[in-house]
Amino acid sequence: MTTTTQTRPTIELSELLDGIRTAVTARATWSDTARLVAEQLRHHLPSPDVLTSEQRLGSPDGYRSHTLHVEPDGSFSIVALVWRPGQVTRIHDHLTWCVFGVIQGVEHEELFDADLNLVGRSDNQLGDVSGFAPPGDIHRVHNSSGTTAISIHIYGTDVTRVGSSVRRYYD
Ligand SMILES: [Fe+2]
Image 1: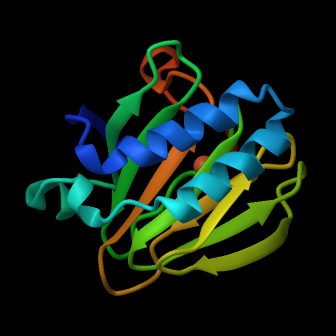
Image 2: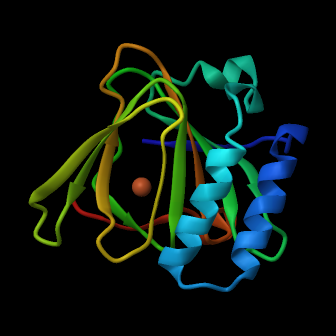
């Protein structure tokens, strides 16, 4: 269960926005775009202060999603996700390339093949950034730590228009 709210863009995102714009205007393949955007996020990883103190608390009802920015031409969106301990996504894949970075806590990620066999797992620590592009992006993310986790996700679409970054759920 996830709820979405729109927040105001902050000054802290301006260098990241410039970097992502340069990356997406290169009109590379999705996987190259994900790599280029991941480089930008590594250099300009926001702090948890992009969210209000209330937003940083998360919700007992499930992880929360806060849209930080939607590029006017629809080429990308930036979303912050807040997970309390134990909160987990459904198994899903994505409509587009995705880049994410952890700005607080740890996120445990499980990767599945098309038959939903577990093919990889990783603990994404504070400061870790990774990017991927469909296909082969079926995953589930879980806050397996004892503290609230926050991550920044960048998707190659206008998530407010298409409703979600998710292409399909697998449960
Ligand atoms: Fe995802």
